[in-house]
Image (cartoon, rainbow, N blue to C red):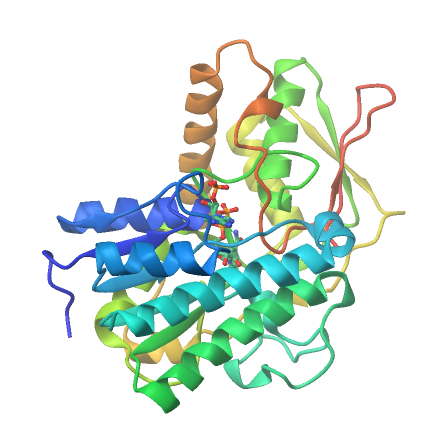
Length: 348
Ligand code: NDP
């Protein structure tokens, strides 16, 4: 059933990559009553505050896109925090949604919930089929608990709670902090900074042969609204493009958009990571939704946003763009700091 444009819709995590894209999409569709609350006013880890907020604001629909997220380094160093924060946030929001009888809730999971050695492309049925990637096990366990909570709340209480599992995302409000960003914004920033510094070489770790899936975040947001309108079943749904791109192809696209004169120097002594990682999106396609934004188009939009943000921050270094907040499931990124001439990007 299509959601009424007058419904009260709460977007948890509205400042993040995903939450901000969902807000943009809701606004574009004409939703008149979108609820958001900054973390400074509502820490979603605190059960009584969350319950009180839900009782006072009575949302009809909830997009749960808030969480403590980070790259491989942050994930592996802070497993307790990633597990605790996310379990609390997800459990509190889901339980509060039940108590105030929210009509429907969409939970954002992640491809990292799947076992490390899943067959590629990964189908929904791989969940809980084997050991997790140890470097983000705490985070993945919390996300798995969130996915299962949605199903158990449906079974036990009859709540219409659903879960989407997005692939790697990118777009406006992405994280360009080289310490914690995904490979895509990291590459974009490295080419940009090479161009600004008049350097014509950008070094990238690995051979470029690893294949990944990249989805423009506005497409993800569109799929979330689609699922809110059309999906009322138990079981999580993969969300991706169904298109795999090699890191070499990605680097070449970014080079041609950002710094066409640059030469890519592959450091093949560095690891490539898993040869392939992508989601099987046939369930979502069967429901009638497919992604529409070509990677080149999404990259150009993202770079335009990045330039705008740099211009807004004036002479401040791009390190200070939000570009600082951590993200989910990040590829590890290292920046050569010794001579300032070389950049290194790893894609494990
Ligand atoms: P971001 O880090 O960009 O956004 C997370 C949001 O959660 C921020 O707005 C943050 O607030 C908010 N938040 C964190 N902790 C709290 C808290 N204690 N109380 C209230 N708000 C809080 O993450 P993404 O948008 O990238 O990810 C959102 C969801 O999508 C996550 O569940 C993630 O697993 C999932 N996902 C993301 C992918 C990606 O490639 N980025 C891929 C697959 C899934 P503040 O702005 O104050 O920091």
